[in-house]
Length: 218
Image (cartoon, rainbow, N blue to C red; front, side, top):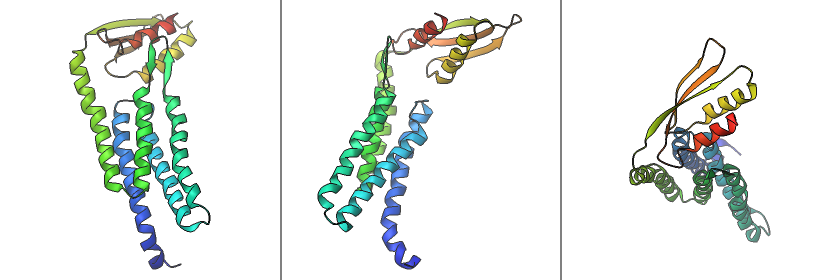
């Protein structure tokens, strides 16, 4: 098959894959900007994967004998499979359940990928835009309804004889999210690591950093 013969058949597939990449990119950028575990690459890959599975099921329905009845199972398995990824983003601890929004976003991005794979490109892009609006705009409204943050400063000091606590503190610094900020990290003359945090004491969800610190210093 020459390129001239192959290209007309490949164009619809390439269009759907490009649209799927764009949809995953839109949602992933917002997630990456907020420092969420499922960020840019994760959302793009989930969306592309869902689109590929859907394209595969469409091909089976058209070209594989006895496949029309089986092809719909692929889309059904996308829903089940992406549930495992979403479950990995949900964590339960003494401070409550976190990661539900991330898990819901993963589930929705997979649905967008299925839509685009079915050829509903415009609907998929619209869904991606609505997802970003929900995550950004409604998050802003939520913060306004709850009121402004009340920021306080906390200083943590760990000695050189606490290597495990220092390692846990470094991991916490990498995972810290808005509105918590790391103001200063320094080492004093005695070799102690000094970290200064700014955190919100008004909202329960923002005070979770205190629970994390308590686990480190316990």
